[in-house]
Image 1 (cartoon, rainbow, N blue to C red):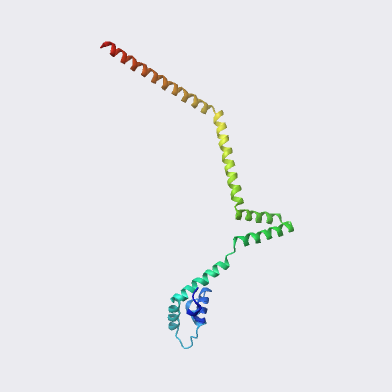
Image 2: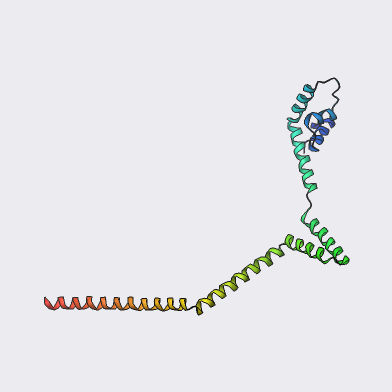
Length: 176
């Protein structure tokens, strides 16, 4: 954080006003005595002060503090939703309870895990169904038979080629 001695109280007030959303000239007028200064002089002084390195650091720090204070932690959200779920259950508001439990499940990852498990189970069922259909599908059986016949035919052709090449080799030797 910018050292306390580096900035005056008025400069710190200027920075706080900037962080709260005031324009530079308005923040400058509120933080400093501007009686007798022209609008142009106020804008010029405000702009110069806003470019000061220590002011820039302080503004960044104040904005960071405001951001972290505004963000509710995961634990706090879980705590508040759990309390609300209990209240909904006591009132008998089951729709509200289910909605809150659903939010809690999404926050802690239970929802995604269950969703992924369901998707995997569905894919496995579809795969098993497809395999069963292929086993009973006449077209698939026919294709399997044709493939087997083609393999046998190719093996027979290879066997014949080998026999011919062997007989050619034997015939050539005897001629010599």
